[in-house]
Image (cartoon, rainbow, N blue to C red; front, side):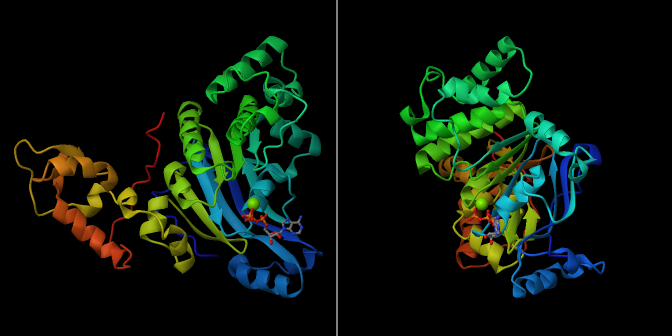
Length: 375
Ligand SMILES: Nc1ncnc2c1ncn2[C@@H]1O[C@H](COP(=O)(O)OP(=O)(O)OP(=O)(O)O)[C@@H](O)[C@H]1O
Ligand SMILES: [Mg+2]
């Protein structure tokens, strides 16, 4: 097995798992069957992948296993060519996995007939790809209505759904515009609205915002979190941007050469990276966004009368303004009791520790709460 470090609390029960991916392989070029002939032990998936590469095959996805929970945003990151898009395509069987198991709501997706699969994709899955694939000769409304026209929906219901998602992504008033009359960000929103109109339970987004400039990108992230706050889809989201992952991910997975390197909450990956490869992804992340009050408090100090109180899971970034106006410190609360005090000195000492290149492996694993305040 590859080193999978899932620092989260134990998985929720099976009913809360939306999608399961177990020991999935995708090998391009050549016949992969002989490699798996003799009941290959997946213990040495890496070694097997190296042998395949030496023989000229392309193992794009190597023994990948993970679960996507109901209502979570699961982010996949990794260098270009590490297999992210291929994994996600395997999940919907747009690419046929060479080996392994994919289960949706407990049902084996790899055993579904072509017809059943089309039905599942049409009704349960939404996909947004980097080049949004809008139909140039259709206006905004008709682009969004297009996948619904493949379902047997009565026209009034179809129109109602289209209008609803148009509102959701903030494109009211642009219904009759054609893609060429829209900005990149607006076109992206049409792509998102189109996949949402299907009301998918499971939503795959492959670098949906990477073509956007930083400002629009941030707006789209907010929009996305707002939509997700209302709709609570199960989402698999690919990005190259760790700050994006930090904002939106409940949990994330880092891939290298087709393999899973680490799975965990973004803060777990930052505070306890499995190796240098993971650490490099997180290098540019400002620690104030990741460190929680619990990580920087001074446990030896006690609350004084009139001292402000905050939850111990508050990020340092969010504490700083309050700290500026309260030099005496902020009392940190957990389960109704103060567990210590954050002061400017305790913050500086914690941050100084990090700027010297030390990873805070001494810190307790973090509760996985990210970016979900936006609803
Ligand atoms: N149809 C194909 N035939 C042969 N090789 C392929 C095919 N599709 C993908 N690959 C190879 O599989 C590997 C993984 O590709 P994939 O597109 O999944 O990477 P990725 O992580 O999504 O990269 P990027 O960040 O650039 O989008 C790459 O080496 C790629 O060249
Ligand atoms: Mg890709």
